[in-house]
Amino acid sequence: MPKVPILMPQLGESIAEATIIRLNIAVGDSVVPDQEVIEVETNKATMGVTALCAGEVVDIVAQEGVSYAVGTVLGVLEVTQEEVDRTGETTLDDIAAAENSNASNAAPANDGGDEEANLHFKTEDGGYHEPKLVEPNVQGLPVPTGKGGAHYISPRMRARMTELGLRAADISAITGSGAGGRVTVEDLEAFLEYIDTWPRTKASPMRLAVADAMRRSWTRPLATVARPLVMDKILNHRRNQNPKPGPALYLLRALAIALAENPTTAGYLIGENVVHPRAFDIGVAVQVDDGVLVPIIRNADTKTLSELVADYDNLVELARARKLPADATQHGIATVTNFGTFGLTWGTPIPLPNETLILGLSAGVKKPVWSDETGTFIPVTEAEIDLTFDHRVVDGGGAGMLLNRISELLQAPEQL
Image 1 (spheres, one colour):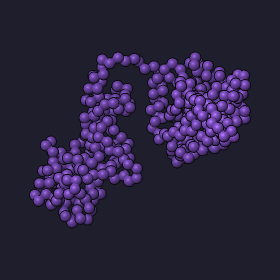
Image 2 (tube, rainbow, N blue to C red):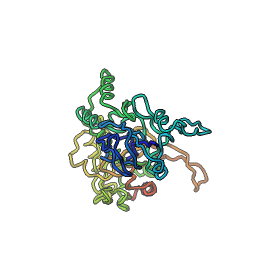
Image 3 (cartoon, rainbow, N blue to C red):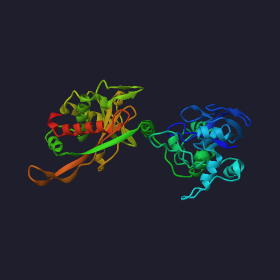
Image 4 (cartoon, rainbow, N blue to C red):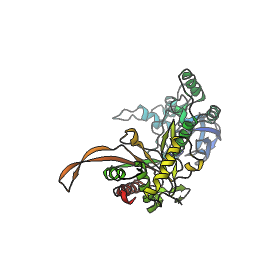
């Protein structure tokens, strides 16, 4: 009689493997379609593996407490040919034939019947080769089922990482030896022993805070759009001001005005609602020793550029001296960063976890730009402005329109 494998299914997008929690079947049991035969745990939830056709359990490979990659054979059912025809399920014969076929001419199924296919498909340790016919069953975007790296963390591994104060990102450099490339506790201990003699420095509280914020921020789908910005009008306006606004303050003021015109672009996605900001408080990134501080300019949409200069300069100075009051860094809705001060001509800044947007300014570069008025190329100072956004809240078109509006406002700096 035909034999049909029970496979570890694709249990969700980005789920590459799962750990067996409970076996609900034993060899000799009869199962029916859609019966939950195995209970598994992923890094997201506890789920069930169901039988896709009726039959008798003739082999169980899976072991409780062990993780298996998507597509791994967990057990085998003996079924009738009528059941195979009804469900269209892939048998061990089908898999053995596919594995023995060449690129131009697929070989026929083994003449030796089910037993020969079963022997061909079985490995020396009593398991089974991973079927080449298995494809992820989640439709739409491609779902990776990678075989290397820390895709899944078992409960035992998670407990050991908690003891050591480690997070998932900390073990991304470790090559796993477990099922599906899973990083085991033994892999972790070997890696820690390997790097034990390497030189190291203690991470400062500031660095740890930045690392934690970036880990949390990167749990969202972030995207970046950019466009050139001619800086000449801003630079000319700045020369005539006393005190002179910093370049980032021009961006901050333009961003606040643009967001006040369209508040949804700075909203938060909470459940099924987009929560709009109540005030347009914009932060400015300030580089300090071993990290970044982000003091907040309150109500930046209601004050003119000249009114904001004193507050801006004071907060930047306090930040560089590490003397910011606690309330000066809380509850901003977006951030502006001038990475051009380091000579960088482009970048992809990352917003804070509590913010949807961050606007970056690159270094200005002299470039020839065609002028329709003079019919010649004229030299201008051009920079790039980059907007990174939470793609759950804002789409590329919306981000592009926001960036275009910011650029338009910056071409009339006297009105900021």
